[in-house]
Image 1 (cartoon, rainbow, N blue to C red):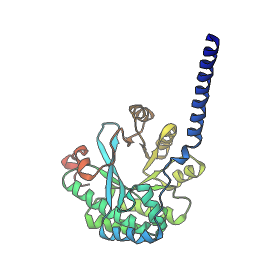
Image 2: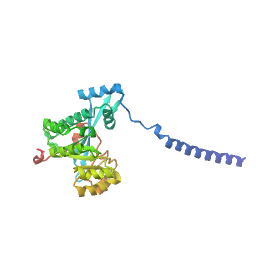
Image 3: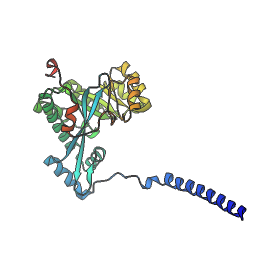
Image 4: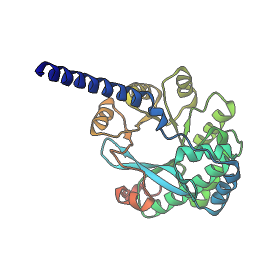
Length: 285
């Protein structure tokens, strides 16, 4: 009897172990079922986005970009969001994709640029010392009117060009895009290259575009910093979510950093306590 009970317990233990392994395999193999798939904006809802842009009904969040040499918030990255009655909150990546599908990328970019410059003008008027970074999609940079639009926004809100950073991701080899970026730098606007993967095309872009800032993350950051010293750009370590990642970014020699460990994207009024004031000699620009 004792032998039978012992045998039954052993079988139960093995069965439990096999079940747990099977369950783990099913969870690992079928995890994609639970991942949130990218939402698309139905064609019938595309006028909603245009109307929201025309009414100024979108929302902006600002994520601090910190100078790692002294801990000061040197700048902020602008991240647009949209609250749709049916879809709920739509984040920056989804919003950009929806705008592209609706053919509204230039309109969204112009709205973000105008609101960002207006907010920056307010901060500068209060004596705050920072710059602001906005994204530019390839579809915007292909337009011959893009640089003129940036110049108009700076003039309208009386923002010094050096306080604006335009971030591009993988601008490719288009001569028009290259010309537009050169036009921005001629205005005094700084250019940042994001999404750096250190592939051959990125290397060509870094040598050709003469950017001011490059974003890097993870193990590649140290290589980006090394190239930066040679090519003359500063490095922003992005995605810093832990104290360990912050230590690694500093050790790699990054000038700037951003990520949840340094500050989450938040409304303007929540970011303001993190912003420092400029010395009187620097408040003009």
